[in-house]
Amino acid sequence: MSDIHASPAQDPAAGETHQVFNQPPPLEQYNAYTGDAVLRYWVRKFGGSWGESRLTAFGHGIGHHLQQAGFLANKHLPELQSHDRFGRRIDQVDYHPAYYQLLAHAIEHGHCSLPWNGSEPGAHVVRGAIAFLHTHADPGTGCPLTMTFASVPAIAVQPNVAASWLPKITANAYDGSNRPWYDKAGVTIGMAMTEKQGGSDVRANTTLAEPLDEAGPGKLYSLTGHKWFCSAPMCDGFLVLAQAQQRLSCFLVPRWREDGSKNPIHIQRLKNKLGNKSNASSEIEFRGAHGWLLGEEGRGVATIIQMVALTRYDCMLGSSALMAQAAKEAIWHTAGRSVFGKNLHEQPLMLNVLADLALEAEAALAISLRIAYALDNSDDPRQAALVRSATGIGKYWICKRAIQHTYEAMECLGGVGYVEESVACRLYREAPVNAIWEGSGNVQCLDLLRVLNREPDTLKALLAELEEARGRHPLFDARLDALLVDLADQQDIEMRARQLMESLALLWQSATLLVYGEEWIAQAFVSARLAEKQYHQYGTLDKAIDVQAIVRRAMVTLA
Ligand SMILES: Cc1cc2nc3c(=O)[nH]c(=O)nc-3n(C[C@H](O)[C@H](O)[C@H](O)COP(=O)(O)OP(=O)(O)OC[C@H]3O[C@@H](n4cnc5c(N)ncnc54)[C@H](O)[C@@H]3O)c2cc1C
Image 1 (cartoon, rainbow, N blue to C red):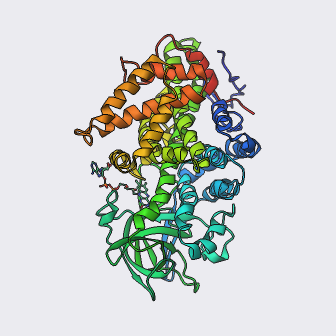
Image 2: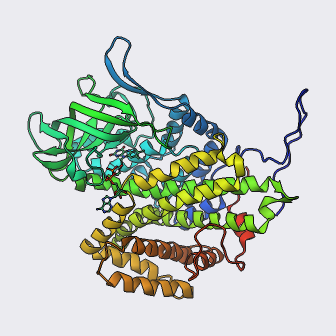
Image 3: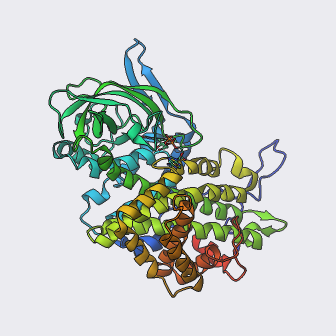
């Protein structure tokens, strides 16, 4: 491969001591969709071809206009104004204009609505690609976008609430102003479950809900209590868990009451976080805040889990995107950098690292869009069962792998990867949050065991998916046989849950590549990830693998 970047001509200004050379230009001014051959392959494979003109327009915005917005929204952090200058409580978070620009672009292109509005088959796949591409501009704004998208099935449970809220949630219109939801054409939705004493175990929630007048589905309640994490507190409404007569129930709590007064949701402070900087995560208190009960009292977890299932899926997509962008940046940088007289991306050891990163990113995207395809076809019980069993596996595995992956990509950039102007820093700091929220690693494992025990059909659907790939690679067959033995053994299964998760994840990624992917990519992945002799760092692919071809496939093309 040759150097794809021409060295920009430079006219040294008077007084400069040196010319800058042997540094690539930033990866900007490209179409993030048409320039990504891997994404295009998987969108087409899973039925999203009809959406390619929409994706091309969206990818243009991401690559040409929103890269800078991503940097600005992460540099100029959200600020809480708890009171106005007269001392009145306002609970307003101010963002940099870039934040609003990012949200508007995503919402107007259907990030939150496409599968709920679209009559086209494959709407989840196209919307999945939009979410994936949006992360390339800024992952933090992905939080309110995901929650808004994912809230739809939970709100749909309650017809009187759904009738007024869903048209605005799915309107493809963004209005970031601080005014009542009913005055806006489009609204965004957040979620507040976690309390100080329990995040994984939400049954420990102490927030209380009392009926204002009558109790029952769709009625207004008054909520009193706290939430330890509430991201995106400027959303127009929040799905909240609270105890109604000691039964955990789900409510939609608007930021404004119907009489035009402010609903008393007090923002205590914003969290100072490791990453996810553009997204304000807050601690809040409900001081008699009004909210509508969604579904029956006591059915809170059953209601909100419909939202959580989709936010977990979006964690898969988001972390797949972090990996894809990290690999692209690493390939781009090394293609424009020479060391010891030769381009970095021509040197065998660097090629091995780059190819390994690209393989991992493709496998992550493949299973994420496989879930999108299953969501698009969820009236088929096998596809619905696959969503139920496999989403947690993908969430567990991809979000964990992204952490090491984004670091390794950063290392490919050398020292410049470690400075804040580099997007590599943002990707690396972002990576752990997808693993922690929406059910941390162990919670995903326990959830898998629960699902397998209570809904054994879901395991059958996943195993059927794996069996489809049998006979295509001896390493795959051997690992699948071993997994079946491990799954049949119930002894100490909780202790072994991470082992099962890892095997299931690797086999599912392998099967997806073997059945739906390019043959040579699949063979490379299986021989790397299912080999008996396992290495623990990236860049340890076998010499038989065509690393150059893998890197070429993953390299961004400019347009
Ligand atoms: C940036 C950020 C934004 C967030 N935004 C929101 C938000 O908008 N709304 C919201 O409701 N929440 C939000 N959260 C909270 C998040 O969902 C919780 O932090 C998460 O669910 C974990 O809960 P916890 O912090 O109470 O940890 P814990 O529940 O105490 O868990 C700690 C660890 O113990 C493990 N664990 C739990 N149970 C078991 C077990 N039985 N066996 C073995 N291990 C176990 C978990 O996997 C985890 O690793 C956010 C978190 C972050 C970091």
